[in-house]
Image (cartoon, rainbow, N blue to C red; front, side, top):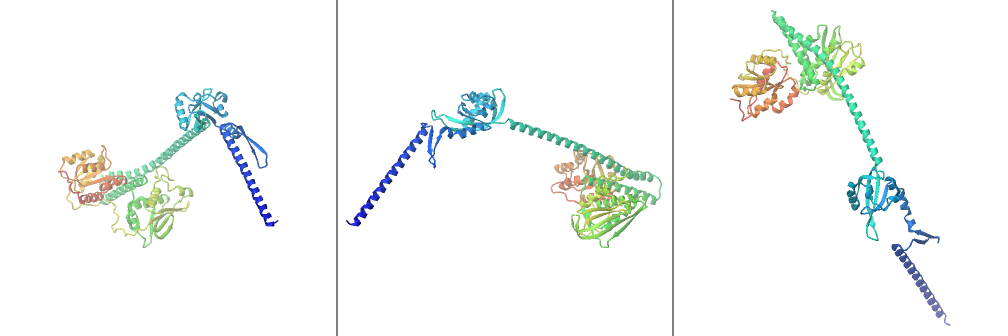
Length: 589
């Protein structure tokens, strides 16, 4: 027998056997697939109640449809919100225990009924709309006992019923009672807090009012004392002038009255500066020259027991400050120094250059101007409060408490600073750091306003319409205008001024107070004149210069601040008459 033939026959038998085995396995897989498809179809049709599955350990496990959704049923039953399923028309198919507790009944009494039973009749159409649209909202749920529970409801579509294709909806109902209670508590707490805040603000207002009245009391006593002294000098001087006096004695009385008037004006400027009614007008000032101009005023204010000594650096820089406020600050410091030395003593006014200073929040070149005394000094508590407005250690009626407050406001308003060095029993030194001026001061000496002879200027004298409601001020101003050579027509209101302008020819200038009765103030008169195309020079007069300054500047009108001297009046009238008139406007015929 050929051995090769035997080997070929054996290989053929092996291949046939393998093919047979593959056909058997393929047939078995097809059978399992068919059984699986039949099982799935039976599950879809509801023909089976359980499925047996063999695990990896060949242990069969049975899964029923009931156990398949048991986890979800437990979750729904234990949730804290009410849950139900219902039809589009509101028929309830299922509810959990929480919903039954919410409406105070049993689940058996709910299932099969309608949701309308637990909804107010007026709200039911809206609920049907929420069901149909699968929306959410807030409404009241009625309980079996008739209580209304605030609730949030949320509807969503689940599926269509296989029998009649009716849509099934799920509804979740959340009780809002606790949330509303918490919100009410929060609102109550908020209202209580607002009441406490209002009460606190009321208490603070009463405290501020009390403090304000105390401050006004201190201010009134101090100002009354100062003004009474000034008025005494003026009224006493007037009574003496009625007598026959020598020329030298008459000059001395008049000079004392003039100084009293200047001190009264300075005190008024202090009040206006404190109330922010006065602005600072900075310009280059030479301190030595300025103090020389104040010598007469200081000597008359400080008395013979006090000596003023000056120590100035030979090349002390000029400073850029308000000239009037600098004078008031120096006067205040010197008067305080005098009061600190009841037995007399020496006041030293010094000035030294401080280059490239970098302290007290300042940077740059400054002049250190100091006023020192050898008086009683101040303790730490007094130093801490001495710059406060109305604070004073003097007896009531002996001071206003505005002196150092004015010094502080002047220094800081000028871009500088103020420092105080003092010890009880060892005197006081007040240092003002004032900014250096890059410009040279004017060579013109500081005018004292003594009332020297002045003229109206080179312009042709004209009629002046004076608008002033105060009889005494109008009488004095008329006399000053007459002294300057002007013819005066006085009126008391803005409307009277307009009538006079329309009726009287030859008026060349209007001098009007800013504050007037009758509903038309000085600025109102200016605007009405322009409305009527009356183009005359106008000078406004005001005791609150800063308050009126902005409006006057906007209108291009010069402003003469009260009190003013004859020279001040002459200069302002001359300047106003020199101003060109707008084209197309003419004075009245």
